[in-house]
Amino acid sequence: MTANETIHPTATATEIDASCKLPLLALLVGASVWLVIGSVMAMIAAIKFHAPDFLGACPLLTYGRVAAAANDALVYGFCLPASLAVIIWVFARLSQTVYALPLVPVVAAHIWHLGVFVGIVSILLGNSTGFAWLEFPRGGSILILVAFVLIAIPTAATFGFRRDRTLYPSHWFLLAALLWFPWSYASANIFLVAMPVRGVAQGVIDIWFGNNLLFVWFSLVGLGVAFYFLPKLTGRPLYSYFYAQYVFWTLVLFGTWCGIPAGSPFPAWIPALSNLAGWLLIVPVLGVLVMTVKTLGGAPVTTSSAETLPYFKVGLVAFIVSGIALHLVAHNEQLARITEFTWFGQAQVQLQIFGFLGMILFGALYYILPRALGFDFLFPKFTRAHFWFNLLGSVGLVIPLAIAGYAQGSHAYNLDAALPALRFSSMGLLLILVGNLFFAVNLLAMFLSWKITLVKSIFSAVTSPLTAVEVKS
Image (cartoon, rainbow, N blue to C red; front, side, top):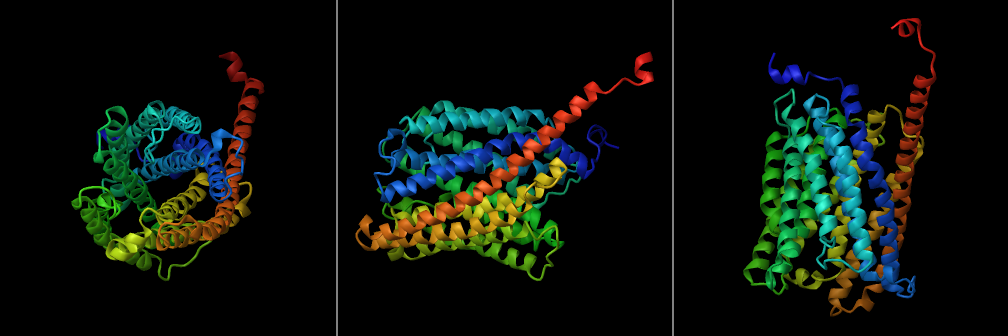
């Protein structure tokens, strides 16, 4: 028996889930609150764009402030901490050992949510940095970076203590995600906020970070989680280890260069290189398509997978659609000229947030939380309702935004041409908001139930009479 096996023996699934319980709750309770807040602010921003007088008397809720605050609340308040919670559980399960240093992520989660609070309040007060997806001032961004590192360290330690030394596809994607975010986030903040560069480089760095966050990092997490759960839910092995390697390497090679519009005011070689990377992005997208079809094709639907598997199916379809859209824009210069700097870009962003990563995370959390806490959701029907509201809402949001972007670009960037579709997209956001409320209520009710049970057990232990053995001792 090795030293590692002696210190970290193989644990049962129940023991592993119990070790992840506190980190999961610390991250997810706050994340569910930010999810609702971000959805409400996104709804306000959508209405204000085509009805500027809505809440016009409140200077904190001008469109520029509330739109940025909504995006950051959804990405930094929900997507990232929820992703970290799922990564913690997946790594512990794959390692077949209890999670290392579980109290560190609990402390880090409070630091994280404090950083998000500082950042959101600063944006609403007009103290944004002005850089897209980096609007948080130094105080908020430092708290977020420190919290991420504090969570990544024990998660990597759990990976190091794994009993099975085999590396699975989920390991590659999720380990890369643990390294990718602090590197890209710290680099962008250093060159844009702490020691800002000047001139054209600012725009390039900002677009580079936004693409690395919303496409590369989201893809690493979403695909890594999906590749873990698909075999578990279908009872079939993930199709082709080689395909998974191919998707991983082509994603990190081509995905990092995308996102710079052809008409950007940068040296011509920069958008040309970005355009080439977008064209080559079809390679990992087709790889994911083949893996998804081959793994899911003919798989039986069981009772345990009926509620969660649809989330993964929709999430993977959204990833494929998003990747194909990026490829088409890069491949068709005329289409790129029409859609750049329009609402078409926002359609792709919202597809990544709500359609891809959001769906993947919800499916994972609906599977993980009952096992971590030891009891089912108090409102099981909310799970299915949440799926349909988010699915219909995502379709009702993304398609109108894409139509609005095309109409805007086709009419010489005249926003009046996009207003009918933008008004319709507000209905999609409303459906998403209702669905997110279902999730938040379900999670918070489960958390309160666990708290009440914990308090009762402590009270019972304190007030119970002493046994004869305890009296003699």
